[in-house]
Amino acid sequence: MAKTRARKFILVDRDGTIIEEREYLSDPEQVKLLPNAAEGLKGLQELGFGIIVITNQSGIGRGCFSDETVQKIHRKMAEDLKVFGVQLDGIYYCPHTPEDHCNCRKPRIGLVINALADFFFSPEDCYVIGDNFCDIELAKNIHTKSILVETGYGEYVKKSKKVEPDFIAKDLLDAVRIIRDQKNKNE
Ligand SMILES: [Mg+2]
Ligand SMILES: [Zn+2]
Figure 1: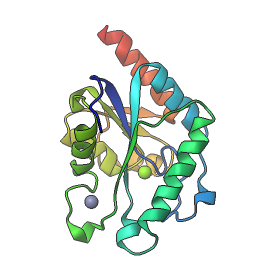
Figure 2: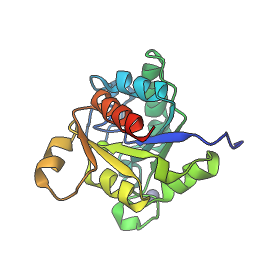
Figure 3: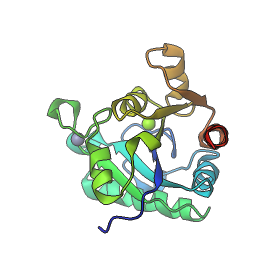
Figure 4: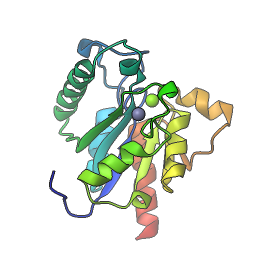
């Protein structure tokens, strides 16, 4: 893939952040955008950010569903988002289980490395947005800012106080407000 000009990207989690969290989602028909998710991604795009989805899909490694099923689910999600004018720049997923000790399962940074090979950007200029511990830890591992959304597992993660996100947002639309404020502060 050709490298595009330097842009800033939002690295966003899939389950519990863009679409409803379901354990081992295996049916494209069960893809449901969370309230405000498409509007939020649209807002981020309008701020000039590219959108890259970074997701752990250990259900593949566990044999719950195939690689092909995951790609169907991603096509369905992309179609649903397109209705709102949202264009995903890329979707990267880890198919492994924790026992595989791969380098791409979040919070490890392998998927970001793969995205860097396709797009030209500085990880420090990104935001990682997600609902789980691994998303916040991924942000730390690539030395960038994290936003914990309170959708999916987010509320539980927030209450646990086991991670310290840079920001906490109600949902993806609320995250736009935070990023816009930060942008205005830095300009
Ligand atoms: Mg998640
Ligand atoms: Zn992996």
